[in-house]
Image 1 (tube, one colour):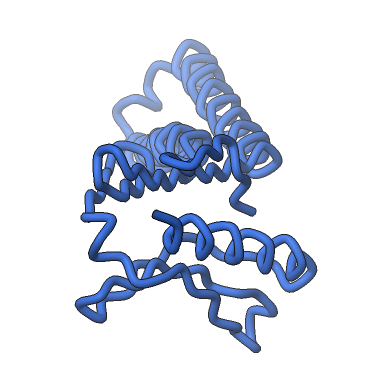
Image 2 (cartoon, one colour):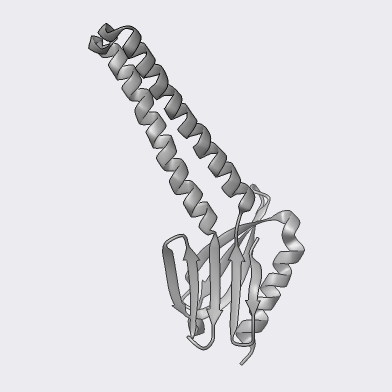
Length: 168
């Protein structure tokens, strides 16, 4: 859930971090890295015990396939950990006359005057709300998902942003 980390008459900052999801991604990446190390150790032990196995194409293909899968999982895990740890940051700044949506390395800049509202849309299948930034042009920019159980916090957040945008 997005949380208000800074609220002044001229600036409003909303941040979402997911420490549990980040932890799970780190665990996934750790298991993948350990699996990769185990495959390396076992491959070396087999090659030292029977050097002729290196001449068998099926063995080389099998070990190579496991290595590629392991390296792919570790790379995917590291990228995932980094992106999840970055979270989402939405900054409304009246002095800079801008709204900045930041996810990992990506930043979307919009004029604060082009923002119509922050809107929540209920998704029955997911049992969650989608949070969107609605621009005057009609464009809807997805911000994050909010579980149904956080409905009261979501209403407070929408009210805070609405009040901020309407104030001079």
